[in-house]
Amino acid sequence: MANIDLKSCTFCGGEAFVQKSRIDGIVRFFISVVCRVCFAQTGNYTKEAYAIEAWNRRGDDGKAD
Ligand SMILES: [Zn+2]
Image (tube, rainbow, N blue to C red; front, top):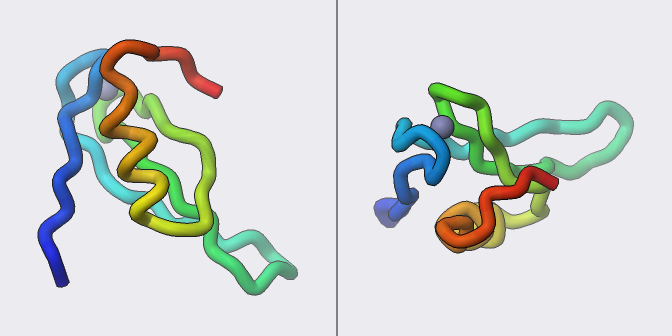
């Protein structure tokens, strides 16, 4: 596994983690990146890389979806 370069939370500087949620009845995971401290999060993506990219891009736009 490659190391994942997740930036610190743009709101509070806290540590972020990748969250995978499985929706009942759908054979698919929805992946988002969530701050452990303030629970800021990205939208849901089907690929971890997309969620991470969205998270890391957030520096200039802190709005939650
Ligand atoms: Zn935070």
